[in-house]
Image 1: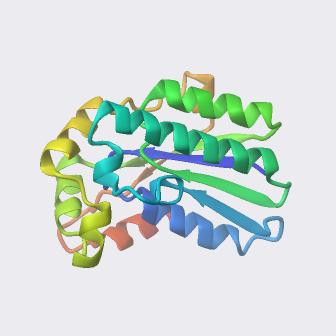
Image 2 (image 1 turned 180 degrees about the horizontal axis):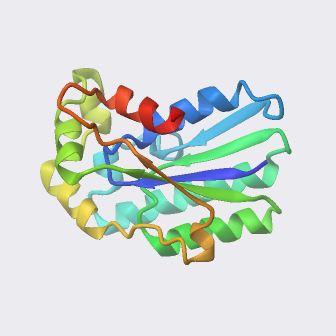
Length: 186
């Protein structure tokens, strides 16, 4: 079964998009299972802040994500969808994931979650209290990750097919979930 690599700014709505895709995929006749890989599953003892706090931690996080993705696509049957829900912000890392998919004989696609940096900062700050400690980024780290983000390019074979999903709210009354649903469902 194909794999989906979700990419975008930190706190841009990638996990919400992944959950919607997971929910919808389970209702499709050809898909019996959906495997979601993220920092929480690949590095369960670390918070997202700790996963990207230093270059060494970042390398270990990417290695853990890549290993989990490799295991998932190598062992998945034709009725399993694999979703990698992470930053995936380095083009070389997305190329490595593309190679793993091809080596397993599976197709893959890129879901590019688009959002404005100002909205991302607001959403990061407004995370519920029970999620803040595990999922929130410090303002400094958030800015560093946004600056280092390498957007997918449809001219690269490893970034094809690419499906941009704009989750930026159209007005101040839009919630994050409503923006995502409007983008994914329409």
